[in-house]
Image (cartoon, rainbow, N blue to C red):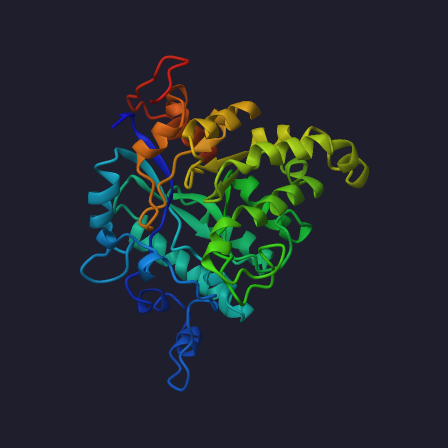
Length: 378
């Protein structure tokens, strides 16, 4: 291993072995709704069918004897937590589009059932390295805020998680502000995981500019597009001014788009100030203070040093990146893959200390290797 210190994995996907595991947490009325013999209801919104490589989206070796990949803690320990020296892992469902089901009442109860299942089966002493995400029903932001206040104080909950964009508005829109208010109130970061809604046919938002992508190639290559709109809207609607302690973590959208995006926003600052009374600092200053991005997937230019040159041109990227594997998906990133593509002087921040700050965790004294400034991976 290139970096032998502890690692925080900010994006691990877990799931249930069978739908009944979650259905059992629903109120009786909704259990009967799901299990109706004339037409059983799915726990998922309708998907666009874009076949994955070899027909699956997960590593073949990550499937336990029974159940889907990500459903077996012992296998996750053997493949991820133990060999990779993971000190903290955020489990964030696979990938949690369930709040996008069309029945709004059902979406609320289903989201709560999923969260209770996760707390009971993954966050109740099974492994002290594992922390969870609190899935949000964004169709009803007031209910999501209530759930944050009720469940988000659990010390094993690491973040509040946006997946399906149920209200059909960019995520800075005031309709979502009750969520940010509740998260800031209890000191819980908010995570945005694009990818959970880019393949939903039933979502009320268009996640790419031209409409729903029709191929996996389009969906995969455009996943950063909706988050750019979301982040710009956070500025325009003053989310970081209204909630100055809010922390935001953006997952699985790549990283190379951020330099030009922040340059564009900073260049447009005079126009932004004219259109919004909430723009009171440079856009890039807001993002440096409030936002972090996960490393998976890192872009792969012809020479990996080109990615470093781009990131260094922005400056300060070593303080914005948080390591993630995306386990157990087929494109899981090995830590050495990440380390080889980033300067060694960044490693301690990217693999460990940036996520500590993003999640508000104390440094418990894990021994860490700190490369000399200026040292780079080869």
